[in-house]
Length: 293
Ligand code: NDP
Image 1 (spheres, helix red, strand yellow):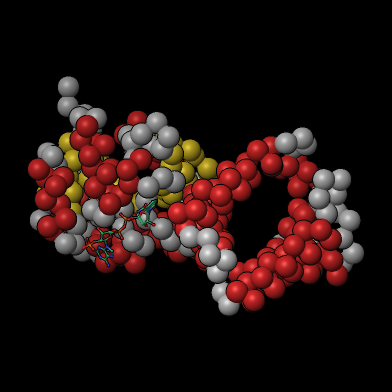
Image 2 (tube, helix red, strand yellow; image 1 turned 30 degrees about the vertical axis):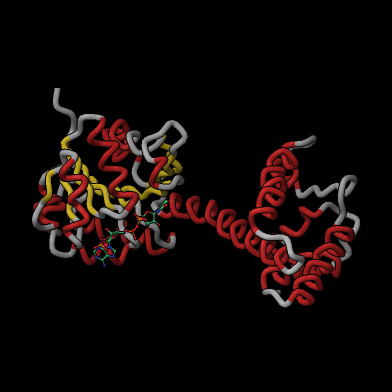
């Protein structure tokens, strides 16, 4: 029995992986990409290549975009606005929440439903059991297409505000990007002590992997943050702040970047200056969110 037709525009690593997952599930997939040669592999696997964005949009009720940003959406769909009417556009491209809301208005002005999404896994994991994707936008736009979208990853719906899926995506990347930079900062620091990356990375991984169990121990971390409680019985701002100072000094002495450790140190400096020295390190959240002080 033929499954739903789907159009996918944007064949970077993510778009290509999505096409393969949709084809494997039996969907009829129409694709378009600015650089046509990037479609070769998915066409060989069974996708249809449209020769214009307008024809690609016209081929399916569900149109998925996997582009670098929302400017690319305007560039591509600008020539296909007549075909948008009555369709559902799902944009899985990165954008600021504000830019996403403007994009939602633009799509709606052409008579289409709009969902935004944040794909939380790299291309090789698309369609695997560990894959998940945040969506936001009108719930009634999502429900008819949920089964198809689940071929990319488990659907996690956040609410009507189109900016929410981006906010969640960026929050994850906040953790991800700063962790990656801090990992490489630590690798560079150890290099100055003669410890090479092949040796340092397995050591440092223990700290990365150790954070989830550390946060899960004892009291509920989220509930404590919500309650504004920062009990310092296991670690204090004074202790962690001294460590943050030492990290800046060590980075300076090693001649490596000090901006990253200084940004962290500033959180502790703020907390110490406000008299929070005896509280848990989590008090630095108030250095980060001035609106809540
Ligand atoms: P790429 O940057 O490799 O591909 C982006 C696609 O956008 C390409 O098809 C490119 O076309 C197209 N594009 C960019 N600008 C324009 C434009 N002005 N006009 C027309 N087409 C344009 O991205 P990825 O596949 O890596 O990622 C896609 C989205 O998914 C991004 O928003 C990214 O943030 C997100 N994401 C990526 C992950 C990853 O691991 N790669 C993981 C999770 C999310 P062309 O081929 O012609 O250059």
